[in-house]
Amino acid sequence: MKTSTKKRLIKFSLILGILMVILGLVAWYKFFREEPEQTFDDANEQFKYGSVGGEADAGIPYWIWLVLPRIFPEHMPRAGGYKAFGLVWEEGQELPVGFTKRTIGFPRVGNNCALCHVGTYRSKLDETPTVVIGAPGHSFRVQEMLRFLVAAANDPRFTASTLLEEIQKETELSYLDKVLYRFVIIPRTKAALIEQGKKLDWMNDNPEWGPGRDDAFNLPKYALANMTVDGSAGACDFNSVWNMKARTGSNKYLNWCGESPSLRSVVIDSALGVGAQPDSEFSDHAKRIEDFMNNLAPPPYPFEINQPLATRGGALYSEHCARCHEPGQALTNTVISLDEIQTDPERERAWSQFAADTFNEVVDDMGFKGREPVIKQTGYLSSPLDGIWMRAPYLHNGSVPNLRELLKIPENRVSKFYRGFDVYDSQDVGFVCKGPDAKREGWLHDTKTRGDGNQGHSYGSELSEDQKSALIEFLKTL
Image (cartoon, rainbow, N blue to C red; front, side, top):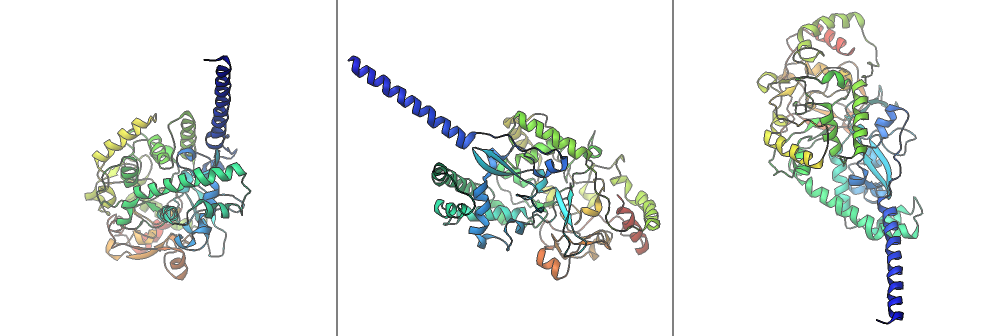
């Protein structure tokens, strides 16, 4: 080979190598560069808006997320943008509670625990909602939000041209960013959402979840463990996450049917749903979340309490409720058999030991540390009643709207009511569940629907009306 030819080849190789390095650096910067996550000095703010590390794997590009409700309003359940899904959105905040924003190459939106574990209440319709950290997110319509994202991605108008035109109304992307959004980011987002829709298709054959609920153990069965769809319906309310230290220990369990033997297991399994990965960063997130929940106290009842009546109710609580619901008692945070509790069995039937074993194997293979395996138990958990005033509607499936209804014999409980409305009913202790306002903002819960029955837990139904009022007054104090 001539010297001149060899020199040209060397020069060409050097130029090609430099170009490849430049392209690699650009690709890293635009797709994988991780800016430090935002942290908050206040632990409450960190819980509401702090990352749990799911943005890289499950995050949606921020600018795409922002414009979707404007482009596809016909796929929304009602007007109001993302607030239509019952999200808690504090004044002055860029994102709803439970949403995170982090730059990994480009700005991405993710979720955290607060999405399902922050609620609100109002004393009247025209009042600014009070945000309650650790309460069940009783107004959040997660199923509707998932369906919206999937429907938008499947719409023929989900194209780079349509989305970029709307994005340009919000921000001026650079020429390179426009190219990347047009040919990479938008197509990949569309494909990911469509694929997510395929994994969620099973829920369209099941009863509706409604606000404040999800199908907590069918989701990991099908979406993570890729198990065969079995037709089970396990819709259940989001739990409160107060005083978790008092709910854990030897022979104490968590989740509605006692599937989880430790708080770390709950944190890991929940974080999987928002895309968290088993890295050192997640270990820090998990410890922070555990410490926060272990010491988070429920808010005091915000309305007037008749103290003499509550004192009378305290004796009734000790006699009729404490053995299953008072921290430290033998049956508290244990599983009560279906034969005993007699509540709707569908949620309990949705999980099996085979499902537990399969799911545990999947999570172990992912490499998460410090997680105790989930199990199968037969019955429902008897949890403490801390902050019970803010945990309506009641029973595992939210089939009883307030405490007064819960103390009736099951045959006399209301069979249809509206849930998801956050105006408080201080007389019956729950949220307003009937009337035009509740109908407009809520969702109709029909106890005749599979999995939504209000039977069982008849404890206290034999009390007189005066005794029931006294017991309810005491429960306000917990």
